[in-house]
Length: 318
Image (cartoon, rainbow, N blue to C red; front, side):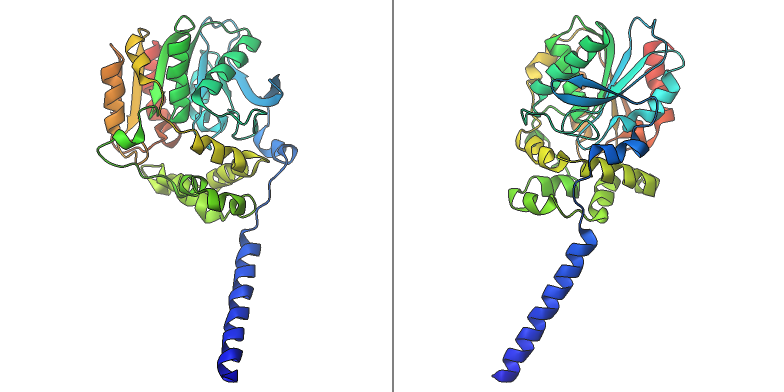
């Protein structure tokens, strides 16, 4: 009996030691935004005050452009996801992109509201402050849903619409269930949220990013650094849990009223939002054009900016 007890205590001590080592190895507390700015908010980044937030924004290209191009990122991404498109477009067009509330350097909002409706109000508030009344609006994933919801709410302001693997239809209505990135699955589990406020294995972030690429070999260490730091920005992990609670289904009935020229881009290897949804958007938005990139994933604009922006330039007549 004594031998058994000693063995059990030894085993328990070993488990505790190994568990402690694992916690130390993956310990990742929040990072203050000022700590992240030197690397991720270099010029032409700026911060503007919107509803109590300091919104991270980049506004590039000719100021006399009558129809600026506005780019909206998806869940857990940042304005950096559009870098390739911005480089290709800013020589001819004014390009505006910003970090949505709850994500990247902008961080949480005071209301703890990350619903599509709140994002529509936020987008229009940013553009009002910049003095932009009409614009071309493009968005990816959640950003795509925000883009089309903005077009439904204020069609007089949206001259053209570009949806890139956009969300909005109920995920459960897909014939093929979506494959959520590991980080998103964890964020949907309330029991794990408290733990993930302090622990974030880099491998979880890397697997999540690789999951949204058609070719995971394109995911570089620097790209993982970016997504890791944007997740660690103070308050963002709690905001992600709230964002997941609020769901991704929108009022898709409004899509049938849209009349502006619309381009729909989709990655054929998207495991998060299947191509089936891209085809639904094409059916629901009259006169829209669907272009599929068979080898790309959920973020085709980031995975292959040159090939995808070429289609956008054609759509814009550039």
